[in-house]
Length: 145
Length: 127
Image 1 (cartoon, rainbow over the protein chains, first blue to last red):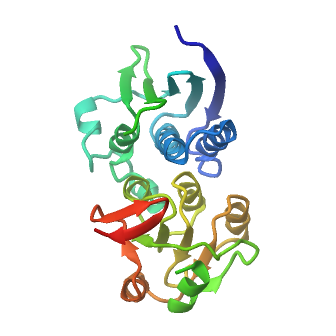
Image 2: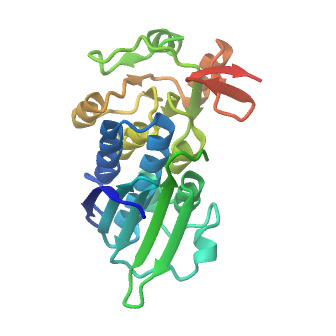
């Protein structure tokens, strides 16, 4: 049975591009303070950033929860958006529903979920019946990806 | 080569003079698509981009990039430089285009972030 070492929640506002990325930055700093290895911190930070941008752009905002235990680092992004109608398409590199204004800031290229998948050891995506998406990401401690 | 040498190769101004630019940089990536930067760079990569906004600085921070060269003289806001300094991301600015900036650096031995480049402890060599 595993014990939780740290639990923290970050709030993400929809279309708040002034603060978008702040949660991922805070997650990164926290993991560095804990002394985790650079490659592992980078993988978690990239996954956190992509998930945060998804919540800002598509998800009507939400929460990003970080949980660390002895076996893994877990991020759960829970948003207030419409959900993902076609998960298979969303996982395809290059598929995006983002508009031109999102592309102008450098996102919306259809790489968000594939990028997360590249960084984590487990990715679970669940549409809530009442709307919104829960994206669960885990990076195993002690395992290389 | 370090970032001072990089700056001289691409006629760049150093916009964050308080940051240390003496660390060696071995590979670079040119893009305006930030997810590509997150997907295909290595730690301590130098980014060349024509886009400069808050998300570029955040991207550099989470991807642990060595620094950013803003190409074709794009204007850089002071608030973004403040964030870059706080995140310890050196910012250089050149009037050269992306193509010429990349070309000049490639010519003097800067490597791409491709799979045929091997990096150990952020030191990269062609395989």
